[in-house]
Length: 212
Image (cartoon, rainbow, N blue to C red; front, side, top):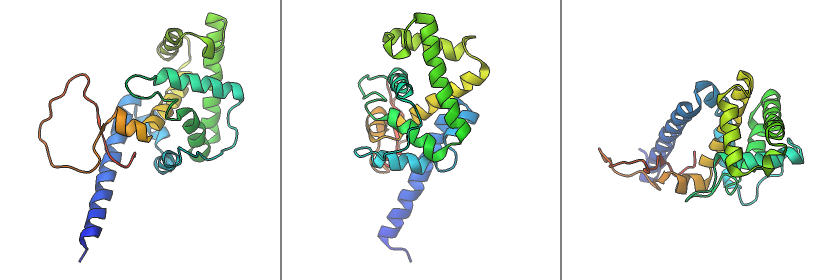
């Protein structure tokens, strides 16, 4: 017969798995099934959890990106998830999360795709504004990314590559402690059932304790 402590641990594992499934469904809703499956495939979730746990002393991975590419990635993270009433993607380390996740969970082709799209965005900024993406004003950076993802400035393949990179950044943010406890509506332990909760445009999504 299981002890109370064993039962509690079993309930916690079940709760965490339920929330992982909910998170995956939200990723599918945001980015589509193909992109979400690519980001969340294989060992992605446990590797992301490991990175979040080691955030204060991140592992030293190989150099996937050049110094310039890392600088552009830094700016992309800041543009995609800027600081509001919660920290930005850069503040939670998404610019470090992306290469870590790519090296540990994704194929050489996916790594090359991310390198390509980072350089493509930077080249496009130079063509449109005569300066690197990192030197643009925030409004220019935002508009460039919107145009890149939605119109003829990019091919369908490049749009897919950009969505994959963006999904990685978002995944990194919402598997960080800050993303879970501040950007989402944090529930530290499973609570009782509440059938209806008032909501408005500012109501946050729910998150579990385990940072997915």
